[in-house]
Image (tube, rainbow, N blue to C red; front, side):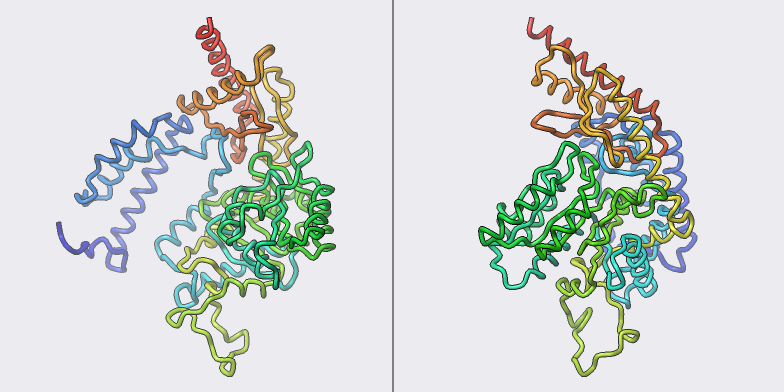
Length: 490
């Protein structure tokens, strides 16, 4: 084995043709795989696939891209979970638009790092333009700013970091974060990472539509004050992970203003409404937030990762600023330059240092398709969810929890005379059996302590017929489970 990697594999001007051949071979392989995909998954198990992966000798290179792609077919491509298939109805994963894939190919090859100007140049300005564009769509005002992140979890963490730092002089043990009982788990995770105790997050009850109850929020805020606690932030959700519910943002904003509390809106899922030609009104009130999480890799149909944190007052991002002499040295006060002459170093706003040029994917999408086209795709899946709700509501085999605001359906197989515990088992079995068959992929969750199934509809090519077919498959697996249970009990 050579102690040095062959320079013939480095991407440079001498190897332009090798780069073209390799990328073309990869594109052709993926295109053929996508064209030939008949199921969202093969149903392979970890026990079946692990030996294939473990058998690869990573110290014995194949020396040829085609051979490596052949091997990749066995260890990954053949058995990948394909979000573009219309019967992938699982998690908040989207099929991706082609201009974004083009952007991904370009940014990976150039490999800019978005921490400082001298590592990215125009990439810095493109990211800043997209942050401004999104902040304007959210209505956050002329002082707004933000930064691209790896995802909603990081965006929520940074938002709550800023909220903590803006709560001046408070005893950390008394800080409280108020969020609905249906908020994302990253709220609790962020509290832990910020050094706050598990009691720091107060779960506010939700109504029948799984939206935060503002009466309960007002009561909790008043209780905090009465007990000498300090409300640090209220987290409103514009699109809960399980139900796609949108909290009443205007009312929450009023309560936050009354109590002087930071308002964060987790719009990781619902941010697609910012581009919607018909549904933008569903997130009215977002313009009053102090910070907003957006996940372009959900409802803007971008490849992972593509997310951002937006803030109403760009000055609050200073709480993430640290200086290093080798990267972004602090300038003496006497040496300060006017804003137009200062280097725009994005690391001054970010929790990350080295950071991919993920903004390029969204840039290419907007420049090729336009915002209305992207928003129209999100409108399509929201309309599909409404049709899916009607199918479920009319079907005696199922009960559906809430009428969707976005594109998620939570439902449960039921049968007359079947005990709830047995129905739990039937739903768990149906999801597992469906995945094992590879015919469709659905998600699962709990509601009121019971097991439910979940369709997360983010593929505009999924049809009501696909939904009806998957419901029949689920019912078939559930009925088989009940029959087998009767046999075992007899």
